[in-house]
Image 1: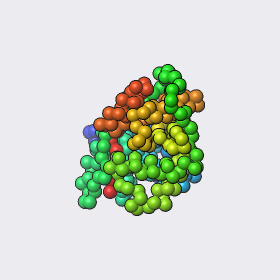
Image 2 (image 1 turned 30 degrees about the vertical axis):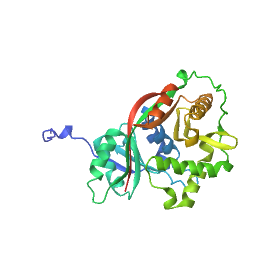
Image 3 (image 1 turned 45 degrees about the horizontal axis):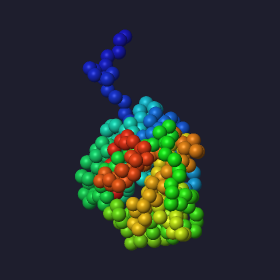
Image 4 (image 1 turned 180 degrees about the horizontal axis):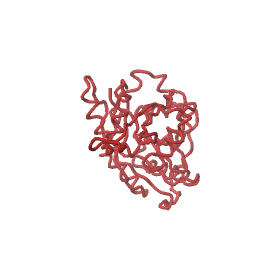
Length: 295
């Protein structure tokens, strides 16, 4: 007997299910993210660290994974910040939404269209508001394009930060957040903020002169697929004197010497000094992000 199906039945898409990813399931999520390593670099790193110990002051990583018919179709981080994979579609976002809606507050940083869609839904919930809402351009410099010599007359060579740099790094991190119009971390949890900065010291690269730090940048992701640089800051008195360029040159040299394919970072739209610096070093734009700190 021939089976009868209603018109359009065979074309109906199967359901997408989302749940928290377990460490034992990490490899299938990583395989999905590696389809676009450059766009997914930060999320790749977070997913690989799932279940491992985290630095003092940092939240443990929490990842959700969406599947259709057992196949991974989307990956997103919930903590320490909200990050979506580059291929997330509207129906995958629907599957993630119950988890996102449950967040009391959060920092989301991902491709502009998906964040637009997320916030159009979250903002309809009573009391939801943004503390920070900005657009950023992502830049990358590939090793094959890095030809700038390291020699810089009159500027000290950068180095890896040390534990005794902590006090200056705390000041820099606080000032950087203020310049981004983000809440002052000293207003809520000074000790927690210090622990967070202390947990990142080994990722910090600095330039100093006469014992004073003048520039800092954090190599927060260090993979052969790419390095992700965040938290770039130059002390106000040291700006426009070549220290940021010197620090970034040293950091890029270190990354490529370690075998990294590229170095990437994001520049807030309107930061013309930052854009000029990175483009002058050979960085090229490859995407747009929207960053929202919401409550």
